[in-house]
Each structure stands twice: as C-alpha cells, then as structure tokens.
Amino acid sequence: PKLDGCKLLQHNPDDTIQLDQSYSWSGGEIIGHVNREVLEHELVITIGIAELHQYAGYSGGHKGIAVGCGGRQTISQLHHRDFILQDDIVVGKVHNNPFREAVDFLGSAANCQYALTWVPSLQEWIFGDPKQSLHYVAQNDQPWSFISKESKYQNILCTIPSAKAKSLYQASRIATYIAFSPNPPIQERAIFYLEASLEEGLGSEEGFCRALASCPYPYTELLTQEPPTGAGAQRAVMIAKLLQKYDLHLCNCIDPQPFRDIGLVATTEPAPRNTNVLVVDNQKTLSKIPQWRNP
Image (cartoon, rainbow, N blue to C red; front, side):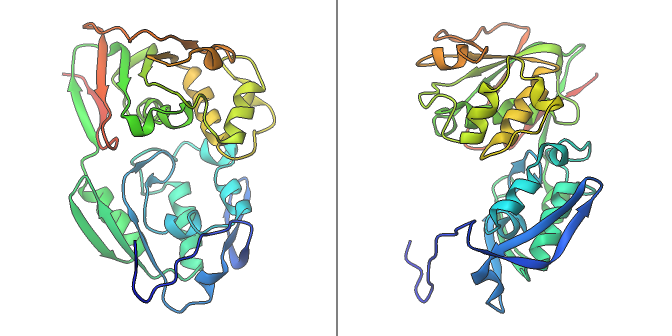
C-alpha cells in the first residue's frame, strides 16, 4: 500500500543496534537489539494485530518492535528452548508471562510509546500504551470455548484453512495451541488429527526442518539434549513436547512421504469422524480454543 509521506523499509535483523538495557531471567539475559531506524526517531508507533499467541499470550503491542524489528540474537534468545518452556509461558496468558514481560521490557527500552492494534475477536481498534493495550485485550477477550462433557474426548480433529495448510510448520500451530492451553478437552494419549494438504512439506524454516530430522520420533532429544537452533527450531520443540503426552497424525496430505521419513504417521486419507473425536474448525484465525468443563 502507498503511505503518503512515509518511507517504507524492509527490516534486516542483521543490521541492528544494541539497547542499553537487557531482560534478565533465571537462565541468563536476553540482549535487546533493534532496527536502528527505531532508535533514531522520537516517536515510535507499532501497528499490529492482537491474536492468540503460543508464547506471548497474544500477539501485538511491544512484540512488533522487540521481535518484528528485533535483531537476530534477540529473536533467538527469546525463542530459546529453555526460555519458552517455562510454566507461565502459556497461550492466552498475558499477566506474569515471562515472554510477554520480556517483549514489553525490550519494546519499552526501544522507546516505543504507542500501539495501534486491531483485535479481530473484539472487532475493534485500540490505540494507546502498548503494554496496557494487550492487558485490555486479555481482560476483555473470551478466547475459550468451553465444552461440557462427562469425560474428555479420546481424539481431536483439526481442520486447517488453506492459508495455514501448506506446511507442517504452520499447520501444527493449532495442535500445540490446544494441547498447551489451560484445560484441553482431550484425554492423555489422544491423537491430534491434522487435516492439511501440506504441499510444502515440513516448510522452509531451516531450523525447524533440521531439528525434526536430527533425532528419531518422538524427538525427545530436542527436549533433553543440546537445544536446537535456527529459524523455526522452537516449533520443533513444541511438537516434541506435544508428543510426550499426545500423538500426532497427518491426514489428507498430498505427499505423506516427507513426514513418514521423520517418523510421523501421515496419509492421503481423511481423518476419522465419530463421537469420540472432537472436531475443531480452524478458520482464518484460531480465536477460540476448546476447553473442558466438567458438568
């Protein structure tokens, strides 16, 4: 789009300036690096969308600066296995979430004063302090879809919209969002059936692909050995964590072989649909995550 009077720049994560402050946690420090243009301007406004996010609780706010305009080292440290596996880093959680605290700290240190945020679930725009904007979203959003049932489902079927169905990297998000939500409505060792074409295979994120190919299914070594690195490695960690408690089957694949090669169950056939399978229809965004409510 054309923005009169604005100069559009493509962010380069390898051309950044180190901030004067860093975020400290029990495992060390996250060093803030940010696009030099951000630090050279008096007024900084981040524009984004607030949706459920695996680590930050919700996307948007200071994350647009700390990650969207962040340096490669900062992004890597924020997504380091030992950092993202902390108990309070939970989808939909903003308060006392170390990932959210880190991006808020680093965004503030980069002098980001305002956020203009679209919230699809609320159908409203919010403008104001980046941190307070996300707290407003967390207080007013209703991200859970409660299911009353005598017992949890044996399995879960996730249908994936075409925009997210091209690679395992993208399609697997719905499974981990549900699996690591506060009270998923599925039994332990339930099967997550993902219906997706997956024509791009694992995806283009080299760290993700390398991590899954580096050890045998169910990839336990990604959780116990040296942390994987590279673009997207954190998503491989989340899949390995999911497989500690559940199973993952890929259905309706155009070509199942790349997934079978790394030990996953994959087929061109559709997933089963019966009374023991909870069907989750993930359309444009995963705005509602199913939760179990014991009647």
